[in-house]
Length: 184
Length: 191
Image (cartoon, rainbow over all chains, first blue to last red; front, top):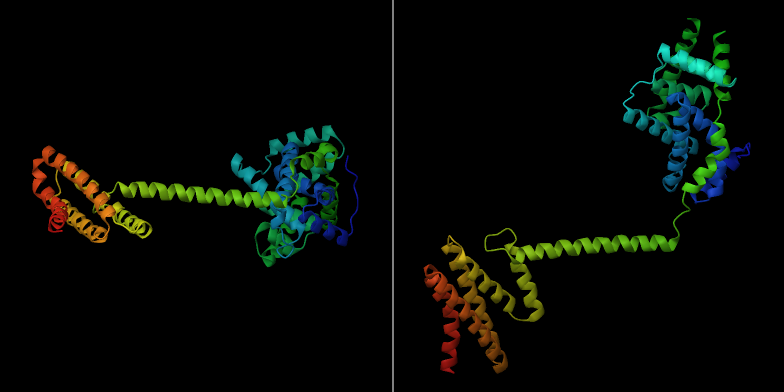
């Protein structure tokens, strides 16, 4: 069972350095730090618990295998992880030919009912999913990374492969969409 | 109100955590799968293995190319490779034996073809005579080498005779080739 710990930025950087050198334990600590964040990022893109688990694990595996090529000069470790997670989600969607994962009204109701029945924590999931369902997959990624995970515009630009300025403009527009949708 | 909505949404989003399964055994699963960094000796061995495979593939390619070149005839795509290999052999052995043997083989092969390419055959015969005469000059001062070379030329004569009896149509060209042998014999008589 994982012991959840809070890590200071300097310690986090040290862990990344050690992991890059091949320290498995340091990587284990990074896993603890990022597991929830990567999981929920993936989850709100695929809307499937088991698939999200699978993609999350693959993200950490792939990240470890590519660590020797990781350079802090190219971006932060968290943007490195999110980029891998995002690419795996895209690969999955491509394979399944599910170009759009927008929830239909029917799916929404079914999922919501199931989730509410399952546990109280799922009420939050339902709320968030409902709100995000008005956005396209790409837009959802940007909102999650910026507004929910509070990543910098530069980091998000690195993850989604867009210019920082374009991301900034998009975030404002998307937040307006979410707010307006609330009124409906 | 709107701001509050977004704040609530963020708060709700952050309540979403990894599943119990991932929290309990996620890292153990990953730890089993991830490999420790490759030890130095393995890296060296890996590089050596890659190099060996590269050399092996290169040798296979060269051998295949050389084999195909040996079977090529004048005008063929790989014929220059054959000529080059003869030059290399000459550097190492100091004689023209490889080139002479190749020319004899070519004369025999060209003479056995259903449609004789007289032009190519004539060309090969001329080249045969040239390399034989060049070799005769080289072995002139050594009795042992002369004797050995003479025996080789006799084996050529036998093959030429066989060809002439098989295909009288190439008699003229074969007779030309035989002149290289006669020249040697003539010289011998003069001695």
